[in-house]
View 1 (cartoon, rainbow, N blue to C red):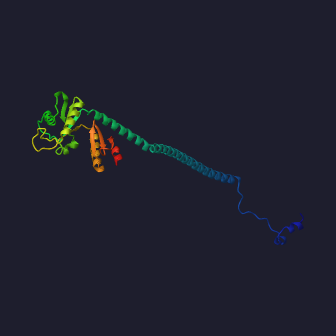
View 2: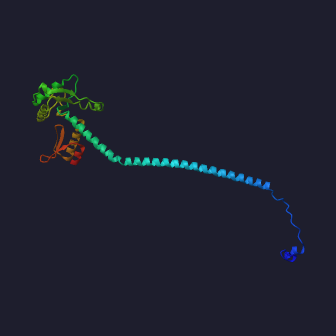
View 3: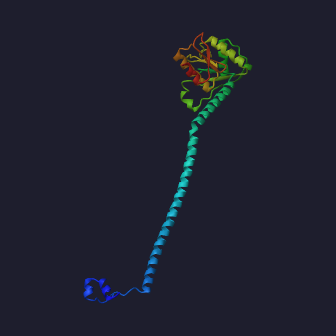
Length: 272
């Protein structure tokens, strides 16, 4: 451009007074300085990148640990669910086991009672040192009019008193158990004793105060408890009869009502 056009692009001051070129007081960066600065920046960036990489590694490790813990929790939850499912079936299993135990107890009691079918139990006879049980039995048989043969008796003994019953020993002497060789002979003696009624220790040839003695079928402990409960229910409900025949317990409301066999406690509950 010519001078006129160049002056048109200047400010008013420069148009009047020509300006001298401006000189930079600070020297420009050299390539070496620029390289060093870039190198420093690179080192800093690389350091930051290394820190980020380490953080990523730490995060991965934490995530792996978390995944492992979650897997363990899932396994425990699965195990707990299996146990809960098993527990949910426990009531029915317990009920089945209780029924099986009750059935086994019933069968065992029936076998035990069958093994006592030839036995006679005599209660109320005081125990004395040097006593002769056969003589006592012979005296009872003579009193009720029963002819006892020596071949009728297999064995005769007192019931063993266990430690749990020792405190009651002074109140109730141990029973005498007579095992007959034939059940029919036992039944005949029982019938004769029941017809006679009112047997006492004096009838058995025993000295001292006269007390009642009783002849009964030899029941198992379970059947004795059941008979005791049947007698209690008899009093509560005004039943007329409770008796034992061949190891079985029966009740009857009156002479015209039906005979009911009592096998378990539930049978007594049905009477109420």
